[in-house]
Image (cartoon, rainbow, N blue to C red; front, side, top):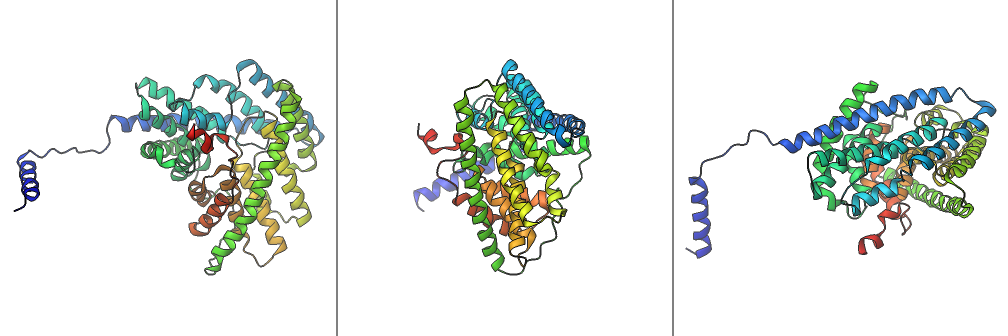
Length: 425
């Protein structure tokens, strides 16, 4: 008998001689840390959402020409909050801290982020609550990690779990929210954070549970798209083609944002003057095109259910992209993911108007997936999130569109923290 075989037999007999030790549960102390992070994140998200809804309902009473001074004043107040309390940063800063600051998100920025984002989102800015929620829940994860005396990857994982709980509360998709919190850190290096996937999933599930209890959330699609009927393999080709169109407008969005960013940076005014000016412009756009007001959570259903002409849809597409770009660059706070889904919906409806034989639902979902993947470079999580939000259960066409948008994205990422150069440095 060969020597290696003998050694293997000896090891096997030694193992059999040892008493069998049973661990009745897979979870342990660390499991409860993830669960607590998710519960706290769900509570924060639920309370934020309730306050946001009440504030939005109050400010919605100022319509017609009153929308212009309302948004201007709210922009000014948001700018003053940032000026006096401190700049909470944007999604770029969150990604930077997770990747290069040992996963630490500073909770001291939370008051400024909460207050400024409430003014911006509730008054009708074209940015959603996802960035504020992620900042607050992610930093809460960091804070809990310090209480539990975690360090290194464990602390980073708890911060990511906090971020995932914020994404999940808004999107209503625990798996999609968990993947998004990893994938947005860097599209090519998400596997570097594989240790955080289980913490993120656990926190997401608990966050979704408590958020659903607080706001009485039901299980089902958020946007009422018509049922999609698979017609054959060519549907995948159509999804990729619609993905190309979505990617094109992803490029348009990125260039428009860069254009307005140069303008606002060139002016070199204080932040509250920029947010005030941005509020005036946004108010004018909202006055002429009320459907472009707000971040699109409810407005997407208005688009789907409405019977709008192609000329109106084209104008909505143009001015919504302008509204998002101005909101982002003038210093208003919020996230651009759901607003991009609004743009994708408009684009899908335009395609259907031009080509009536095209399946409307397939066109809309494909454009949504492609434009978001092009800008955020998150094809996997975008596919799952859109499946949950739209009720589109055929993941393969969405994946085709998402990957098309991802591979046709600009070489230099829109979120600067995702750049390869930063990794090399």
